[in-house]
Amino acid sequence: MAIGLAVALEQAASASLRLAFATLLPMPSDLLAPLQLHQYALNRADQQVAVQVNAISNRMTWLILSQAFLVGAFVTSSNIQTPGFSLGVESIVTTAGFFTCLWLRTGIKAALSAMAKAKRARQVHIDFLQEELNEVLPAIQLEDCEHRLGNVPAERIPTLLLAAWVALFGLLCWRAAYLMIVPLPHLAR
Image 1 (cartoon, one colour):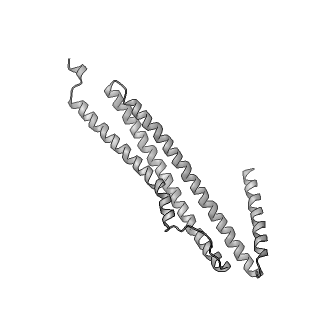
Image 2 (cartoon, rainbow, N blue to C red):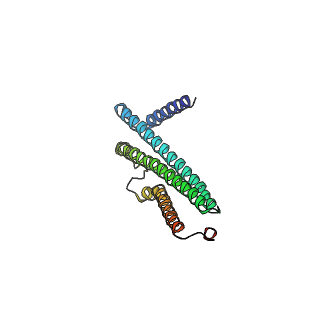
Image 3 (cartoon, rainbow, N blue to C red):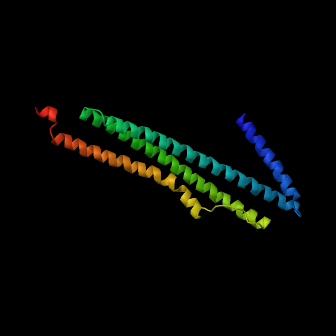
């Protein structure tokens, strides 16, 4: 059903596109086909960019939710009274947090790369349409500050979370070494 709806929307967009181009005066009929082709390709590239933006948004949501849950589990496990057991649970949670973050980071980077590829393909069609229609079409370039700054959270947050899990694991290793060296008060009696 969703596929049929998408096809119907594409056909409606194509029909309205033909109507819009047909009303431009003067419009030679041999120019109409390339314009429609580039407009269609531009719409497809826009859809691909939108899909990747949604994928990034979904993966960032999964990342934040999973990390919040795992940080909560880590903090809760630090309240366990048995030091060895607490250390084991914290190690498991830290490992799960690190790998969850690593996998989601990989997915986010893949979506960012696919989005950049779609934007490069989109630019070819924008350039053609601007030249043929002799009008400037609004578009944010990959090199623009807005594009680069807009990607900073998706690029940096997963890396910062990975660094936090590595730091927590280092702290756990230090704590394990400390527990091996210093006798526990209840065992020293």
